[in-house]
Structures are given as C-alpha cells and as structure tokens.
Image (cartoon, rainbow, N blue to C red; front, side):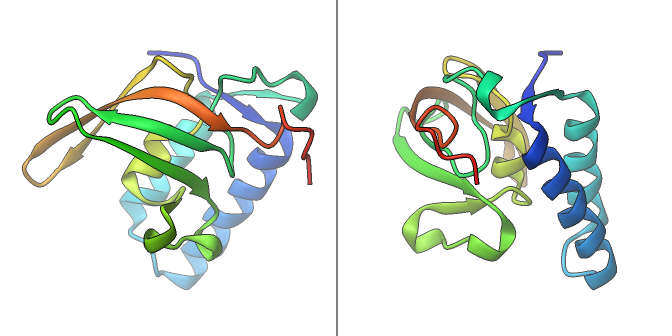
Length: 135
C-alpha cells in the first residue's frame, strides 16, 4: 500500500468534517470510514514540506481514465465547496477520497456499481501549497 501525504491543517480540518458529517448523517458511514482510513495511514507534514506533486485539498489535477483513455480535470474540495459543474469534487466523494494524498503518476482505483474505476493522476495542475497559498 502506497504511503500518502497530507498537510497538518488539511488533516485537522478533515477530521472536523468527518465528525460534523457523522452528526449530520448526510454522508454514508462507509464513505466517512474510508476517508478516516486514508487519514490514519497518511504521513502528516507541514504545508511548506509537502511535495509539489502531491494532491492536497484544493489541488487541481488532470486525470486519465485508464478504462476509456478519456482525460478530465478536477479540483479536490471540502464538501461545502463541491460543484460538479465547475469540476469541484468533494473529498467525501469516492474519487475525492481516492485522490487525496497521492502523487502525479500514481494510479487510483475505487469500486463503482459496474466494477472498478481506474485513473492515473497525469499532472498536478495547481497545488495551493506549492503556489504559496496556505490558508
């Protein structure tokens, strides 16, 4: 299993998101548990120390669907900022959870009703930490 990286502020905020969503009961317990598992295995680092090729919160990534060859650009956001029309995907969506902490070049997989979705992270188009944005 690959090591994934997460910034300390993202980690703290995502723990808060999980706790809030458990209270609200708007998100399936399975999705919250999956995000929790990813956070447990993540290596927490200071924002200034996160490698520039790692998907962090509010990063924009170019993905290639390994099943179809189609490419798409998505931005990984907190649930309150999700907007599929703007290609902003919630970290609580299966693809969002799968992206968090992985690097350019990595292949991510997650279960979908018709089987397994497989995507390669082609490029980190934008990462807030490498752009100097740490709020």
